[in-house]
Image 1: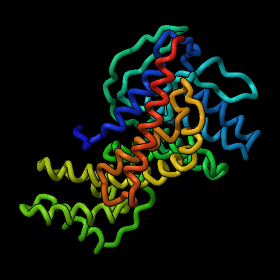
Image 2: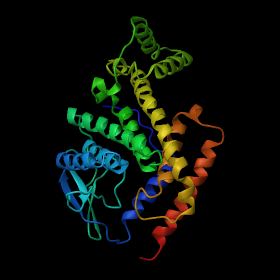
Image 3: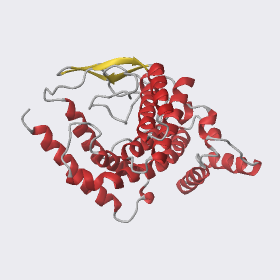
Image 4: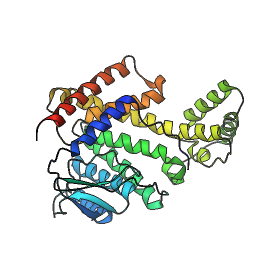
Length: 319
């Protein structure tokens, strides 16, 4: 299924390349084990029952659900599950899970890539894992407003919701209570997406974006052979989720940018939270320039570039 995906600006690519570099240079990386997502989720839920006010448990639960969303029931953890403790992840693990990116397995100092993965249809279980991940991340930031990594993960999973909107369950978009008048106006806007006048098409896209998420279910069920109509609908569905994600990327960036600039870089992929959040901010604002605050793009890009340089210097050090 064709999807509207304009993923990377130059700054995003810099951040991604810098992150991927962390698994090279012959370093020893924690051995990864295949674990059952269902069993791991149960293990973490039991831990949360004992520590209901600890945000870390919810962040780990959110990440496990995210991994299940991306990979299915078999997920990788570092070490075995231990009674009374949370699962651990190797330092190459990121909250930016993907259903299509190559999956790598780490054994001692060797990286054994498994190659590109073909995207698969979203099952009911997948959709439930996505929703559960978002809910757990929300709980984590509710319990700890300073949890930048959870803000980052929450933003990413909200963005995933937009990318796969056409394949998710209707209740993924919340309760839909639209009036007949609203439904009629949305139907008219969908027709205008194919208008010959560029201004009319743009106005229709803006009207539908403003009506999100109430019109989400109607939009995803639209059948049209017009490619521009399809692309514009996908852009509306994805755009709404991206703008939701933007607020969480901004929070993660604000919480960690000064700390990351002043601190020492780490080999851990998600150690520079502000760099990863900043790259996503730039990507979203590239597609939604009107959402940018005054001076935001330049300020964020400068920080991302500085952090990329620090990380590059770390990778160049003799091992």
